[in-house]
Amino acid sequence: MSCKLIHLVAAARPNFMKIAPLYHVLKTSSWAKVKLVHTGQHYDLNMSDVFFRDLCLPAPDHNLGVGSGPHGEQTGLVMTRFEQLLLKERPDAVIVPGDVNSTMGCALAAVKLGVKVVHLEAGLRSFDRSMPEEINRVVTDAVSDLLWTPSCDGDENLRMEGIPRHKIVRVGNIMIDTLEMLRSKIEADDACQRLGLQDKKFVLVTLHRPSNVDDSAILTRICLSLIKMAQFTTVCFPVHPRTSSRLKALGLDASLLHQGVRLIDPLGYTAFMNLVFGASVILTDSGGLQEESSYMGIPCLTLRPNTERPITVVQGTNRLITPEQIVDLVHKSLCLASGTRHSIPLWDGKTAHRAANSLQEFFFCEGQTC
Ligand code: UD1
Image 1 (cartoon, rainbow, N blue to C red):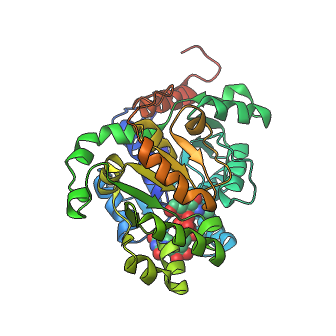
Image 2: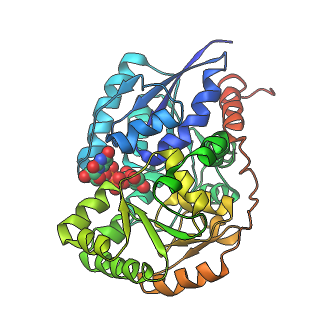
């Protein structure tokens, strides 16, 4: 069996958690030589390096250093720099996770050079093309050779877009692998204790979507709700850099702090998940948190009109809400908070193994029975 060179793309905070379990499985496979390619879309210590440490990932083999910028510029830089690397190394396949600009940029650069593209977390759709991530998902799926979906809705969406059935493999949710792989470290972390947060006595808030934080009127309305919440519960809010600069520009950071909302810097994986485990309610616009909270049975209020993860609403703890509903629904959720864990098929900690098996079949068993 010949050894296949695989580029595993890391780029931005939510994707480090998706590639880690797969990296560890592929690293032990005799048929695969895996190289980590960081595009550098996220680059701050607490947006990138700390995740490599927490997830036991080595330093990337390559860092394309693209940094921040407008969509066209950032995606263009990813394509230009990744193309140069692809021409030099000629990998047998590129694995791109999630839906960030680097996901699409790397997929496009690879497919145009005839390099096989594998999409980890394929098929998710919010059906909202005003979201940059939705464009990235649709384009990436359209050019991928192998599409790994986390749930049945992903398979259905791809079939409706005309993707041939043989390209779609439902492997499950890889974020759950990471959570289970690091559960004991998460439980042993002292983040809640350090921050003086009592178990099941606080609301954890994360916000970074342009639709919530880039518009001054919407962000101000959300912050007023957080201030009202702080009058009846503890509110802990690790602030994403995009959100941080918007809060500072509007002078809202000082008002929030003054009114008792606990603004903190972004945290690494185990520290942040320690807060997730301890939270009574989560208020968020993140994709991954909708899944992690559903898996853990923690009530999740998602500040968005739609979700590409409908299974978390139908089978999990997730509820989509508007800014006007925040205070009332957080209050109600705190009164009702229960700890029911949800069991969603293939969210079982074994996704990385299924993905690696699927890739091995893709390389070595095409057209044969393996
Ligand atoms: C990106 C993804 C989004 C994902 C999110 C997770 C796209 C289109 N969006 O959004 O899907 O949910 O990551 O965080 O790819 N910045 C820093 N330090 C960093 C990284 C960013 O300060 O390490 C600041 C910069 O000012 C930058 C801004 O954050 O302009 C936004 O970063 P960017 O990667 O463009 O988008 P995100 O909002 O992080």
